[in-house]
Amino acid sequence: MPKTVLIVEDEKEIQDLLAHHLRKEGFTPLLASDGETAINKVRKENPDLVLLDIMLPRADGLEVLRAIRSSPGIAGMPIVMLTAKGEETDRIVGLELGADDYITKPFSPREVIARVKAIFRRNRPQETGTETLTLEYGELMMDPARHEVRLSGEPVSLTTKEFRILHTLLLSSGRVLSREAILRKAWGNDTNVIDRTVDVHIAKLRQKIPLLANAIETIKDVGYKLKER
Image (cartoon, rainbow, N blue to C red):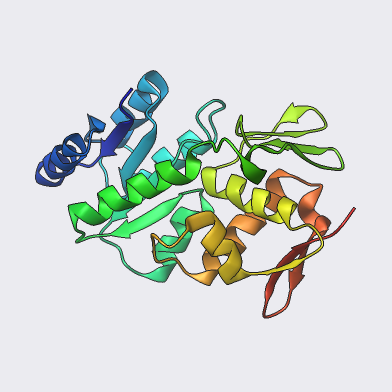
């Protein structure tokens, strides 16, 4: 079944351009021109990925992002931000709220398609290797095949990137990982992101999973280490 991608963009030319290229690549585009419509469509249609502009009428993109990330059942949905704002602070705000990727306008449709494909590739369950191993860390349990994380038996809602970073840390428990190594594992080589991105996602993991607040150790000027248990 084709993957569905919700395009949330109030500029019709950009919306039509992205929809055209997505269809050419075998995806099914869904359209929303304002924030309120986007939130309703996400809840009703449950798309596989959202391309989300920040500057929108009737609830901006950051409000849409907050609504998705706070809604059980859809909180882990991959979201790529589209915006004309190119400053680092704007990128950080989106990442802090849980965006998986960030593309600055003007962009090439090919770049957007490449980012979308990369996210779907990284999220595709693997049939062999460590991707299918159930991992435990105290009361924390991760099942990569089902894309589930539980703490003391209760489900924990993580974004795609948070999930992949946690998976990387669990597989490397006791070893120091540089920010670059974590970036490669979570983002691959398909996108340009900054080191600060890792710090933002680590902070979110510590916040969502109290067990990790002290378990993830910051190694100054290097990266992070998950303490052995």
